[in-house]
Image (cartoon, rainbow, N blue to C red; front, side, top):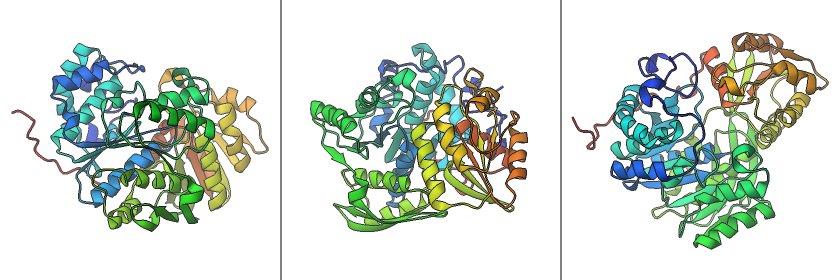
Length: 454
């Protein structure tokens, strides 16, 4: 029996008794396009997503960083916040946060029991049902703002039923081509589908051909269009293993001295995008809330660094070429201690032939493994991959993930282990090592909902 999550992991103690088949039995995990099922379900339960303000973020990479920054800033401003992201690392509970902490397993199970018959009658997919659960939970928890991350694409994604105060599109890169199209223009058009009439849109995408697609959609629906240009708005960038410091020029608050605990130049861009969007909401946060919220954001598995013994572990969920390029740049900038061992597990339908060479070139040793939580139909063949991807360093294969972790530890004495390739790989390794990605957050303190009937 699977845990409360979209994987085959054994349930952790806070999840026992809450299995996936107890949530939405029979719901398909396949991608199901269209908004009709979500709209019908929400109408049936009184359109709970109209009871709070929403912020919506799409794009290829950086969506979760932007959404979690929004939630952190608004929480620091005194607003009660919801945060919906996907996928998770170790627990499904990570996907639905209220005021910076995950909802309890019992609370989620109770909500799923109420919504299950409706989801089943409408033939909702698993992601649709989980999105419905999040939108209902946020209303019942009386959040004031919900930061919502697009699941896949945008135009037909289940989250696209919301009408946000502002939306953001981080960037556009090649990923999920089987669903979104083979060209950047095709993918951009899908992601631009979250742009709605009259709703301001902000993007950090800089390539003219992609910007043309996004601007065309904004013009077509009458949405004010704004662009964040890192080279113009960000200055005095300082990178460190403990985070990223920079000065950001804003229209509303002037120059802000900021620090995010998320490492890498790309995270300064993500923070800048989040802040530019917050300038455009009806009631912008205070500048002190912006500074404190950016400094207090937690988004694990994105350049996350954790020391265990004499080794530095770097956890990064990079699962496409653009994300790998950002990871490689960050590692080059921060120069973590050597030897540097890359522990990689990539899904078989990803562009591993182009993702891996930059990582191999950077490493002293490489270990390929298979994340046990990944869907069986998407597993890669690391032995076959190793025969194709060649470099100047030894590549070892250890399909059993726990043994692969031990081998990486052996090879990296006094150095660094970079765990990457997918959310499944990072989440599984965190569990093997006993590292709770949200340890500092604790559990959400439950609030009695006025919408729950005894």
